[in-house]
Length: 318
Image (tube, rainbow, N blue to C red):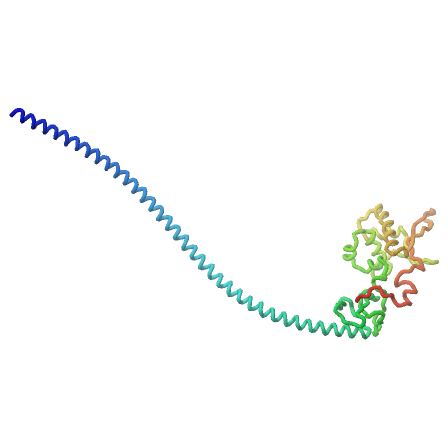
């Protein structure tokens, strides 16, 4: 009896230990599950935050898309306006092109008529202003035109050796017959500066203009005698240069005198000359150079022979 009770008690004790061991395992299992649950809750919280952030980003992107859509709508409206404007411009361009073609056709017709009239007038002996004639387009007898310069300083075209039937102006010389200094003297100051950079050359051209054109003024030339048509003293030339080039020192003006005289001689192809003459001033004698124009100097347009004979053809086109 006692052994049976002890056996039962031992069995009960084993059972209790088993239950306690099972209970500990369950506690450990519960603790593990609770830890996992906590981790899961944390993960869920993180995921929730990420979803919220993503939702905010989606909202921002949606707003940007709405703004972009609005901008595209405005751009589309502008493109439609530009398209309308382009169509209007194309219409205007088409109209303008037609008008231009019509105007060109009319202009070409008028130009043809003008060329015919000019050709007829030239064949009748007329002298036409060079700036109104396209010499390469005119169909005239002999296919040649002569360029001449009249005493009004303007250039004209005529048929070779045809005098002006209206006798409106004498023919002086063709441009190519003039001396270089005469050619330079005919251009204005701006053209003269673009033609040459040398100051003595420009002064020589101005000096010749002052001699031949009374409207220029400040003429330092003097009337000559005994084989001298005109002359100019070196001292007078120095003062003239200082008047033409304000600010020029006296020493530099003296250098310019020699250089200007050399330029005049060279550009006149030595038709002019330099002579030395002894003069007296304040009881003292001194020798001074003079630039002279001899009476027999062959200067185109100024000699008796040039005035009496018709000019030679110097510039024939054709």
